[in-house]
Amino acid sequence: MKASLEASEEAQGKREWGRTGPHDSGQYNQFPEDTGFFKRDGTWNTEYGQFFLEWYSEKLLRHGDRHLAAAKGVFQGTGAKLSGKVAGIHWHYRTRSHAAELTAGNYNTRLRDGYIPTAKMFSKHGVVLNFTCMEMKDGEQPDNANCSPEGLVWQVKMATKSAGIELAGENALERYDSGAYGQVLATSRSDSGNALSAFTYLRLNKRLFEGDNWRNMVEFVKGMAEGGRNERLSECDSTGTDIFVRFIKEKNVQEKKETVLV
Image: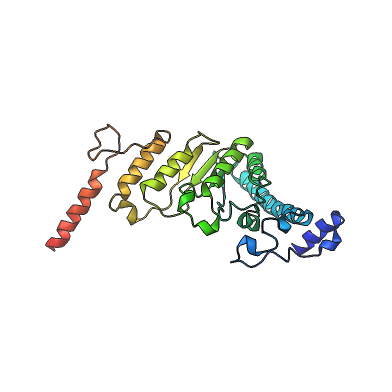
């Protein structure tokens, strides 16, 4: 990496920039404004910062390009549909530098859309872009972290639409509440940007079948199947769907009775 950086600096005629990365990027747990590189008018927005971030992000793009090309070579002609996951890094999204994303290799700032190059790389290989944090809302995040998962998801939706590729999604946290499902339903629609072509739910375990968790899941699946509408199912499912919910509750009651008898 150091040799590659040095070669890039020499190609730019900027050997005075040194042979290592930025020295003012701070430590892992520091806030962006406490560092020289990521603060509002920090080094990230200088000629050197732009050079370094372009070099750094290009490494990630080339890595992805090689892996997608290899996967395409293996599965081409089999009928398999390939997708690649891109991390949803929403911390400090509301800052100018987008420090967390820059650190991860996504050169996305207030002044530059870093997801267009990624989407184009996926488009080159005809691969679905799979993104996370689809269930998250801005209002649920800590204020001091300047998060915006909703803003990030919207940006990625627009980037994939611009690149002409499909967008798939998944939830980041273990959630069973109707609020999280409702956010996914809203995100899955194509009202703004790309609609979701697929959704992976995390995660299947016994908690999913407890209390109202299963009912919420059934309503969510029904809503996704109907294009993102969210209508509450009745207790007896009299609406004529092929989904029945109540037996889960009755089974739990029967098991409790048997436990008491024992």
